[in-house]
Image 1 (spheres, rainbow, N blue to C red):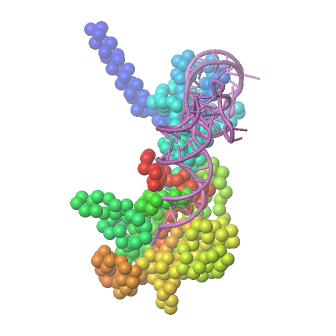
Image 2: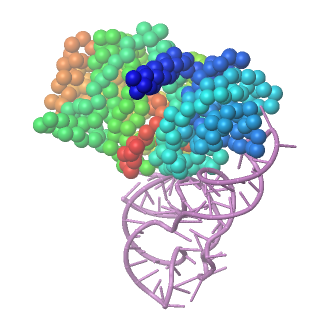
Image 3: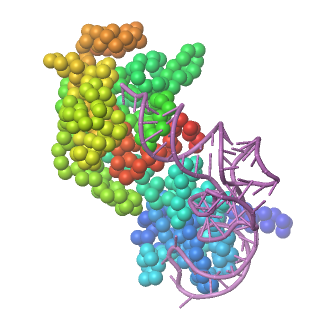
Amino acid sequence: MQAWRNYYQIYFNIKQEYKRIKNMKKYYIKNAVKNIGQLVTLKGWVHEIRETSNFLFIILRDSTGKIQLTLKKSESTSNLVDIAKTLHHEDVIEVEGVISKSNIARLGIEMIPYKLNIINRAKHPLMLDVTGKINAELSTILDARFLSLRRDDYYSIFKIQSELVKIIRDYLYQQGFTEIFSPKIIKFATEGGAELFKVQYFDTEAYLAQSPQLYKEMCAGVFEKVFEIGQYYRAEKSHTPYHLSEFLSFDVECAFYTYNDVMDFLESLLKDVISNLYSVSNEYFNKLGVDKINLDYKFERIKYDEIILMLNNYGLKWGDDLTSQYLKIVEEKIGKKFFFIIDWPTQLKPFYTYEHENNNQITKSFDLNYGSLEIASGGERIYKSEDLINKLKKIGLKLENFSIFIKALESGSPPHAGFGLGLSRLLMILTGRKNIKEVVLFPRDVERLIP
RNA sequence: GCCCUGGUAGUUUAGCCCGGUUAGAAUGUGAGGCUGUCACCCUUGCGACCCGGGUUCAAAUCCCGGCCAGGGCGCCA
């Protein structure tokens, strides 16, 4: 009989404890600090610990902020102090306590804890220092991305990225765009130029898409204004601070737009989106300590010909590509700002780009640069099938690889124009980072496939 | 793929040029102490020379190769 009673008691206790945990409201630190005098439960990570003879200070971090837990040893239960003394960086804990104002705590707010549970201990040593006191090299930061993201700076970068994408989406939806999702596994490596990744696709070979180009064009012939934000692939063995094997692209295509219309649109989109971003993500830009870029000017539209003239002392001749070394000179001359380079030579632009009616040597095309960094390129596309067929023949691409696309152009294709923008490059500019890998969560390059 | 620079505790770094030290420091981590700390502080323990070969009595140090990293170039609808 006694045994049964004990079992019942144990069951009752467990049930009560379960109920307590289930009902306990977890506060995010951002909200908790507004509840002065309230008893709240916080869950998060041990960011820092400091101890003096009479006090134990724990900086608790969650996804919304940080708060100091202040334990006065003489006024806490010995159990609580004992548990708190075993804490380490990045242990996951749950703490109940009262939020109180403090003239001494640097944040002005602290929590006086009375109950503390360790949910999961972190195993030490950690792969890097999360508090940022000891900096880590980029390669360490990437190897330990799950930890480096807990640093204020990297956390801020990816919160900014998230807001940026949201603002772009909102902006485009508001303007009547349709969001599309094109396939990333494709049959033909058709666009020439860039090397593509081969993949085994059941019994046949396929490729990873380098862009949504032909798909967004086909969709623009229906929805008129479409966009896609997605990842694309190229198998170039590039070793530069602004190329990756897997990159994030923001693509737009609009029926009945000229390339000038698209440039107008892109310019106002960037101005609206970035100024909106600055107000929404202000705290993250402050944490990064990066200057906000000025957008209070008209983006110049400089002809490729004019750039060549500008660089005529540097051994560049008409028809040469504007590689980064030349663009750096351009940046020195016109400054670190946005500008378009327009009307590129036909041989430097992809086959689907329309040439000028009165001069087939140049195209209705543009790049958007920020200083020496190219962040977008676009133009007016060939929409008449006979023009495309002639072009494909001229540059030696196989017509049969494009048969479906040609059919699409023959099925009532409107004139259209669009662009592709390197979203991570834009994020680099906004966050003042010098290597694109810093602003990509888990970057892929020639050497890196992990994590 | 080419050129330059580098690889030392978990992290960041000194030493390397001019070979022989107990390989130094910060941070971390273990123990103890300490005015409400806030990059706390103090004492003390722990923890490292990228891999392979060569030169030499002796290599973290010099030489060669490899791998990796950063920068520059090339490649790049």
